Length: 394
Image 1 (tube, rainbow, N blue to C red):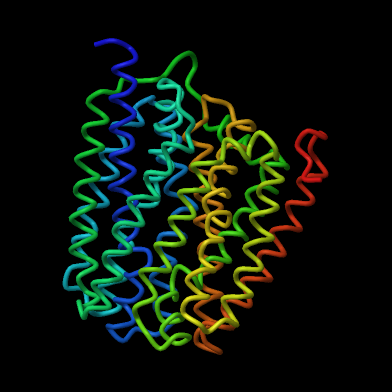
Image 2 (tube, rainbow, N blue to C red):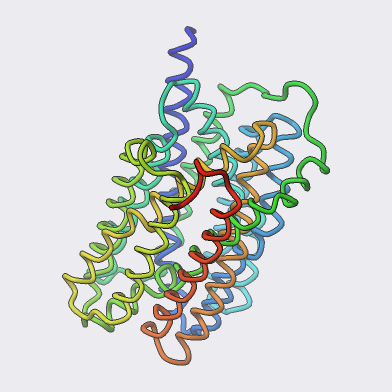
């Protein structure tokens, strides 16, 4: 098999995995909280369930990531983690009590939170070998998300029970497992030279600039909690209809795809830190508007800002990590990013949003998100002051 043909085949397998992984995420992230609310769980209970994976991300993904860097068998570990995640999802079938749902979420958290960092590390290498920008590969995950989230949103509007999100998510997760196995069959070990030691991995957290970056990104992601947990009830309250959830997610993720598609052009003009500052500022305005707008069309149109809020934010963060973290610690670095941002940041945001939901509704939760974005901008300004002029925000 020729090298270009093999590189294209590897890239197609990575794209297939992204489609399936984020297709399952497009079902579980926005609609699993809807299922829990339909079971009669309180906002605080939904926040607790939604925080299990973020809390686990503080510890679990760095362990998987370091193991991938240490062994050079990231593709094989991706199969194990994806298969474990899919099997753990089956535990949610029939879990109607809070204790049962919590137990299922704990098992899922041993595997699921590590998947994005494991596949991102594979995707960066595959994109380089195929001569394609990473952002062009990652956007297919957003395509998978938009297809499943839009389809299930329309199904809910037509009367399908929220509980169907679990078997639907499980089915797509099994497809992701099959795609991971296909990717692993064509992969080889990547260890070259001396494998990184635990001391090498720990040294990353002694980099003051990296810690500031992770803190800013974590606050930014924390601000998303009302959006990820309570978008459906917020739109229903503001518009009087369940029919705006699917279109809102479609516009958001469609904009996310465009943000990733044209990231390379933006990167030629603006530094990663400059792009992050723009993302944080725009997202603060987005959350303020979410708290006050009531028209369905206006709220759907507002989600176009998701292209900057998440799409550009994510790939700009990966670009920053590519520059700051050694290749030998690529998986570990991605995992630390996931642990700090989607782990600590997600847990903080979920708890704050759940508390505000119970003591003032979704509007107050979105107003609190504005303050989190302003905090992220403050940390980013400190980070910019530490960098060389080429990396400064201004």
